[in-house]
Every structure is written in C-alpha cells, then in structure tokens.
Amino acid sequence: MEAQAAQLEEVRDSEDRYQLATYKKMPIVAERGEGVWLYTSDGEKYLDLYGGHAVAGTGHAHPHVVAAIQAQAQKLLFYSNLVYSEVRALAAEKLVAIAPPGLAKAFFCNSGTEANENAMRMARMTTGRENIVTFSGGFHGRTADAISATFLGKYREIGKPNVPGHLKAEFGEIESVRAITDETVAAIMLEPIQSMAGVRTADADFYRELRKLCDERGIVLIYDEVQTGIGRTGEWFFAGSEAGSGVVPDIVTLAKALGSGIPVGACVVTENISSNIKENDLGTTFGGGMVAMAAVVATLEAIEADGMLENVRMIETYLRQRLAEIPQVVGVRGRGFLLGLEFADNCATIHKALLDRKIITGTSSDPNVLRLLPPLCLKREEVDLLIEGLKVICGSG
Picture 1 (cartoon, helix red, strand yellow):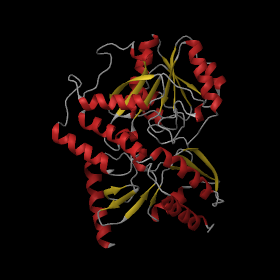
Picture 2 (tube, one colour):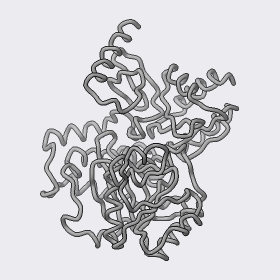
Picture 3 (cartoon, rainbow, N blue to C red):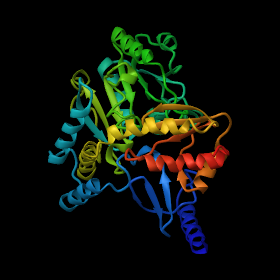
Picture 4 (cartoon, one colour):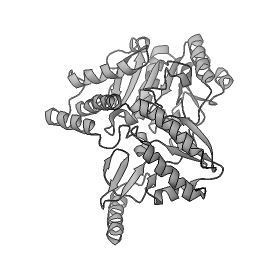
C-alpha cells in the first residue's frame, strides 16, 4: 500500500506540474486494460463501467483491434487525404454498410466536436442558411461552433464569445422547436439520448415529428451519435432504430467508440448532403489517417464477430432486472449500455463509495444520476459485482 501511494503521488506530482488542470482525476495510475477491467501499475484492478468517456466500446485492448493497429503501423503510420488508401476505402465502405439506409457517404475527422462542426458546416452549405437549432441539455463538444451549440450548464459560458447563429429549443418538446424554425434555420441537431445531462430521452413521437418538420421546411436533421453510435444502444446507431421511430437523419456524427481508443471521428451523410460538398469545402490533416482507419475497420469487425450488439441487449435486460433489487435506485434511464441510474438524492457519495470498491462509474450534470457506459463486452458476472457493491453501499443487501 505504501508503494502504491508513493507511486500515485509521484505520477500525480508530475502531471500536475507539467499539464494543465482540465479534469478532476480519480486516484488511479492506469497501466493496462483487458476487456472491462482496468489495471494499475501495482496490479490492482478496477471494473470499468465508464469506458473512459464511452470510448472503450470493444473493451480495453481488444486483441483483434490491437493486432490491426500493429500491422498497419508497421506498414504506414500516416499519409494525408491527398492520396488514396486501401484501409481508408475499407473503413468508409464498412461504416456506410452498417448505417441506416439513405446514409451513403462518410467523412473522417479526428473527434466528436470536429464531426459536429463539419456537420453544421455541411448543413449551412446545403441550405444556404445560417442558424442551427439545438436543445437544452445537449452537449456537442468544446470547439467554437460546437460549444456554442451546447446548452448544458457552464459549457456554453466557458466558450464565450459564442459563435452567432445558434438557437435553443426544449428537448422533447416539439412545439418549442416549431416556434423557432423559420426560413433562417439550416439544421436541427440533437443527441438522441442526452448523456451528460443525466441520460435524458424523448418519446419516439418526438423524433418522428422532428423529421416531418425538417422535411416540410427544408431543414437538415443531424443526430449527434458521438456517444450513442457504434453499438452502445444495442444497435449500430440510434438512427433508424425502433426507439426513435425508425427516423433516419440527414447526417449522423460519430467518434468515441469508433476507433476503440484511437482518436477518430466521422460524419455519415445522405447523397443529397454530399452532392452539395465540393473539393476544399471540408478538410482535415489527420482525419482518415491509416492507423485510425485500421482501428475503425477492426472495431466494426470485433463488434460483429463477438456478437456485441446482441450482448448489449441481453445484458441490459439483466442489468435492469438486478437494479430493481436496489430500492434506492428510483429509475433507470437510457438504452443499451448508455444508462443513467437515478437515485432519490445526490449520489456523489455512492459514486465515491463504488470507486473505493474499485468500480468506476460516471457522474452527470444531474446530481442524482450516475452514468454507466461500459464496454460492449460486459457480462452477467460483472453486473453482479456492481449490484453487490450497490447493496452494501445502500444498505439494501
């Protein structure tokens, strides 16, 4: 224990000295991972039900993904989009193949916020309009246009001066959207499940009415699936799913789990959107790099080969059944492996107590909601560890 404490102190001192303080960090020095487990340098292990901000979709260090990255790195680390690339072509083909019908082309970038920025730009280019409607509780990233589209807590404030052309509607309330969508609106953009806001969802009718409104008024519909995409809801996308009335937007943005930890983002768009984009309208130095593309291909292959979509659906059902044994959990929000555990009161002490038991969960802007965003390979026995921990902590065992 003394050696562990000394090492933590040494690493913490070094990071604090040479890095900007951006996050409140857990007292963990992460060394390696395997599946849903995160290991420290002294051999301690943590059950990771947060997945490093929902990134570890295939699990930590999935062998197929690691092998693909290693093989590509030995051949060519990077060359820009000025050349053709076999692995980039394969990544685009595979991504379009799993997308809902109508989404026909992919644009690769580096992150979720960059994907959202480019989605808004494409909408403006397509319509010739400027305004973007987003929603209370939505989070779309930290770069200038994306943070200006964010109406959650402090985030928009820290992005000031905000980029003009952003309008706020109330999530789940179609009349609030209708009231502000005039001939100046280029796009309506939303997280179909608002993760950071406490895993907020809307009725299926809301998504259907949004699609209808956009079609009537010539507005581009954008789904920010940076967190919900690539299997997290038990489907490849929220777009086209039963939970959203089968609605397919004009643009879907992706990142997080798309590369299993290698930074990569993407926009998947309709032919109509792509037909309005000319050479040099969009650009990115590192987007579509070979190692990132190898990670994307291997990620999609691993999810499919390991039956992870089916696993998410099965384990979600089991997890909800087990959570019913905890009276202090008054609600379970979300879908698949994007779940919010709602407690009657502030759950900060529960979050800390779980961490003390070596179980990592996520907080949210709702003080009563803990978020679960585990790797898609989570199993029943690991769910049982969470339930046992909650029973002890909540005194319901």
